[in-house]
Structure formats: C-alpha cells, structure tokens
Amino acid sequence: MTLLKAVRGTRDLLPPETELWDRVETTARRVFARYNFGEIRTPIFEDTSLFSRSVGEETDIVSKEMYTWEDRARAQSEKSQSLTLRPENTAGVVRAYIEHKLGESGLLQKLCYIGPQFRRERPQKGRYRQFWQIGAEVIGPPSAGSESPLRDAEVLEMLASFLDELGINGWTLVLNSVGSSTDRPKYIAALREALKDKAPQMCADCQRRAETNPLRVLDCKVPEDQPIIETLPKIADFLDDASKAHFAAVLAALDACGVRYEINPRLVRGLDYYTRTTFEFTHGGLGAQNALLGGGRYDGLSEMLGGPRAPGIGFAMGLDRLILTLQAAQAESAPTLADAFVAPLGESLNADALALARELRRKGLQIELGDGGFRLKKSFEIGNKLARNIVLLGEDEQRSGILTVKHFATGEQTKIPRAELAQALRNS
Ligand code: HAM
Image (tube, rainbow, N blue to C red; front, side, top):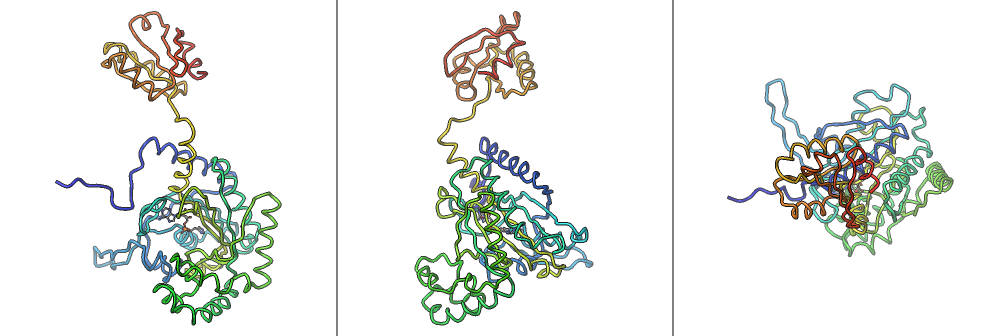
C-alpha cells in the first residue's frame, strides 16, 4: 500500500517549531493591539470574481495560481458558483468592510488577521502552496483620514517595531510609489509604447502582458528579460504633484521616527489594486524568496468591488518566512530546555511523581515527567536531552520531603526541601 504524504507544497508543523509560530503570533497580537487593531476572520474560500476583480485577471496569482472549482448547486434554490481558496486576505477584508457597511461609523477600521492562504506556486525554500499570513488593513472614508500619508508611515513604523521586538535583525524596508489612478494610465501608456519594440525579445508571458497589462511586465523574473526591463520608463517620472507630495510626506514621517528605508522605483508588486505607496521588508537570509512581507495602499479597491470610496493601506507578512528567519538565528543559540525532568525511581512512585510535576507546573515551571519503568541511566539520558535539571523521587525522598536534584550543566547534585524546589529550579 502506498503511504499517504502531505500534498506537494503543504506541510505539517510540529513541535518544537510550533512554539516559534506561537511566539510570532503572540508578538504580533501584542504589538498590533498597541495600535488598536481588532481581529477579523474571513472565510477561507470566496467567490472567484472577488479575486479576479481586485488582485487582477492578468496577475500570476489569478491567471496561474488559484485553487478554483465549480461548486455544484445542491438544491433548486441554489446556483452553481465558481469558488476559490483565498490566495490573499485583503480582498476578503474589503469585501467584508463593504458587506457590513463598516464605513458608516465614519471612523477608520483597523483590522488584522492570521490565517492560511493558497497559491499553486512552484514550491521551494520559503514558498509553499499553503502558507500563512499575518496581515492588517487600515481602511475608511476619506473624512476619517484614510488617505493621509501619516497612515502609511504609522503602518511602516509598526512593522519596524514588530520585527525589532521579535528579534529579527538585518531587515530592509524597500519603498516605492506606483502613483494614483490618474498617474497610472499615463505611465501604462508610456510602458505600452516602449514595449512595442522590446516585447518581441522578451518571454512569452511578457509578450502577452505588453498587450493586456504592461505593468505586470515589471514583475517578470526571467533573468534574460531583466536588462530590457531596466531600460523601461520609470513610474517616478509620471507621478503628479499630489502623489509626489504624498510620497515625500511618508518619507519625512519615517525619517522623523528613525525608520530606515531604501527606495526601489521598480517595486510595483504583483497585485493590481495598489495605488501610491508600495513596500516590502526583505531579509538577506531567505535566499530567492527574500520578501518577509509586502503591502501598500489601495485607494480604489473598495470602489472596484462596488463599495463606497474607502482608501486603505495594509500589509501581509509571510509567517513561514518569519519562522525560517528566526530558526536560522536560533540555530546559532542554545536550544530551550524544560526547567526539570522529574524521574520516579520505580513504578510504585509514578503517581507521586505526577503529583509533584503537577505541583511544580502549577507554580509556572516547565516540567517533563519520566517513568518509574525506566532504569536510572535511561532517566538521566532522556532528562539530559529535555531539561536543565533532573529531580529524583525515590522512597526516601517521598518519605522525607527532601528531593535530590542534579543540574546537568554543572554536574552539581543537591538536596532541596519540597517547599523550596520550585524557586531553586527557577533560579537554576
Ligand atoms: P503578497 O506580497 O502577495 O501580498 O504576500 C505577502 C507576503 O506573503 C509575501 O511577502 C510573503 O512573505 C508571503 N507569501 C506570499 N506567497 C507565499 C508563498 N507561496 N509561500 C510562502 N509565503 C508567501 C499580499 O498578499 C497582499 N494581500 C498584502 C497586502 C495587504 N497589501 C495590502 N494589504
């Protein structure tokens, strides 16, 4: 019988790695809460047209990577419907914003999310078909200040604080402005013109996109096309005064709070809904898939989906990539060990050992419990792998209430009264 395995591009997350996942999620919730974000949970699948209308028909995500199926009607009252596993969460959040009329409060909505996303990409290090994002969106009516460059800078400053607090060093914030909905058509016309001569020398995807959506030519990863892409017009030369002023104000606010950045005039990002500020935080340790997170402003997205005017800005971080970065840092430091391994000396002491472990755990210690069926040597071997100390519970210890404790690193063995044990282990 062939053994079943996790599907290509998906994987199981096992301890101790899951502890890291928990740490990242807890840190994100703590940092985001300081900025008053509330959590939103949207469905894992949505109507396919939500993504084609927002992310864009011509993007890689919609044209090649979505998990889409025709959901058959089960009753006469239902219609069959094309559904898609969400490849990203911004479209779902904006759909929910419109559906629940969240703009009617007149206030900015600050919504964050954690959850799996699905893209049929070619799996490699840091790139999976089911991957996790932690993201946030700030969206609202213009009267609530949703168009202000201060929102962009505040989100970027929050991200810098989050990465610092998580202990990720060596990140780079890369920024660009892709202009407003009036700048973009002028730039796209210029790109289309420039590509008339150049596209025939480029890959098949670029040749098609030169016609259908020239901006997407800039996403091309084919190495031979890169020198040609370098010669194409730059968006910065097509920004109107308002877009230039917006970008300058974002940079000034970042300078004021000391957040470092680089400007990359080619950062257009692979989704169609962006306007003005786009950004990524990259990390050198990740290899080819070096974007820890990406985001930007989407001032027209709500209207593209039939909603009210509701400018917004947001980001999503690849949780899988944050974990890879933390693991690389952790590999250089010592593994985390439990406070103690409690070893009963004989099966008749198993129940008492469980009671002792419970007592210590309730005082907040991390305890591994052995088994009285193990020989002493085996208890020492296992304990040494899992914990900083071993606590021996034999007949004598049980009777006298004085435990024998050995600290593995120093080899020191001491006798400690049960009442003082938790404190001694904590300090060890
Ligand atoms: P995105 O750049 O497509 O943007 O994805 C954001 C992040 O998700 C990437 O920087 C990367 O860390 C991670 N990611 C993407 N694809 C994969 C994959 N196949 N495997 C592992 N990690 C991956 C968005 O999704 C936008 N919704 C972000 C946004 C929010 N913009 C405005 N608001």
